[in-house]
Image 1 (cartoon, helix red, strand yellow):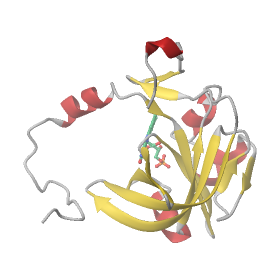
Image 2 (cartoon, protein in one colour):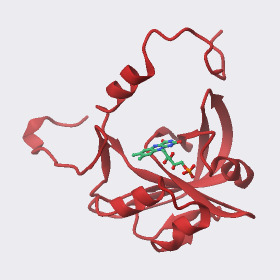
Image 3 (cartoon, protein in one colour):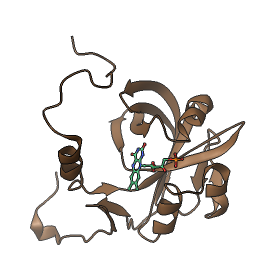
Image 4 (tube, protein in one colour):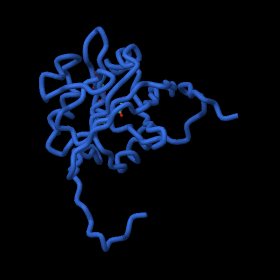
Length: 181
Ligand SMILES: Cc1cc2nc3c(=O)[nH]c(=O)nc-3n(C[C@H](O)[C@H](O)[C@H](O)COP(=O)(O)O)c2cc1C
């Protein structure tokens, strides 16, 4: 049977953490800010470990370090929002992984809410407002499964990416480069 939760240090690693990180630095990723709101206030973190799970029902997953200051609040809130950043929102991305913590992170940007009350960024290029269906621990991290309650997106996406330790933007290839699907 494949286990449903993963303990820290269970199986002997054949690959060093540094080699793994170096490999993962080649995986360009869209940058998001994952946010939550509970009685203690708002919090959030910059996150790239976000993936689409199923379209029907709409569901996504986010991997959050259990030592992140927002982790306890995410669990207590039972909901979160994924705010997909535009390439001109580097300062926000840096703010949500920097020394400013908690509520003060929201002093920059224009924030509102949709269905769950989790903070959503007015000019994000997409926001997914989610109720947490399940939380699966995986060593240092936990994977939060979110049932999407509301979605909002803008036209003309210009995503902020993270690649090889740097912020990056996207250059679209001409259609002739290969048809999609
Ligand atoms: C580009 C980038 C992507 C990140 N992705 C994640 C992620 O997916 N999950 C995570 O837990 N932390 C991620 N982090 C780290 C957190 O944003 C960072 O540790 C944050 O400061 C933790 O929150 P705290 O400062 O409130 O403890 C990422 C950081 C950067 C710069």
